Length: 80
Image 1 (cartoon, helix red, strand yellow):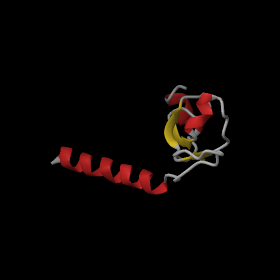
Image 2 (cartoon, one colour):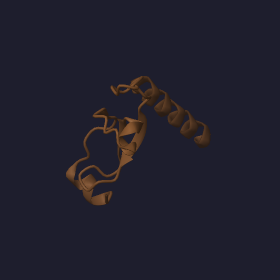
Image 3 (cartoon, one colour):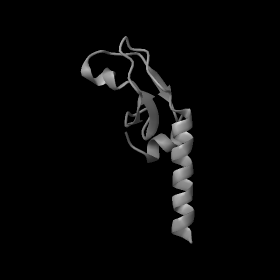
């Protein structure tokens, strides 16, 4: 029963992320934003949507946090 409930919660979270996912970035050749996890010291484990072109030199400015900011204690527990 727990596996079913865990699976249901996971698919519910995935559906929620898809609903909030932006359709396209703002590049001259728009692309579908990708979900990325930050592992910086200030935002360890925090998810965001970013333009896939950012990492290939086009430097699109599209950026959208998915998760709320992590509290100070969380930043200590989840190292970046």
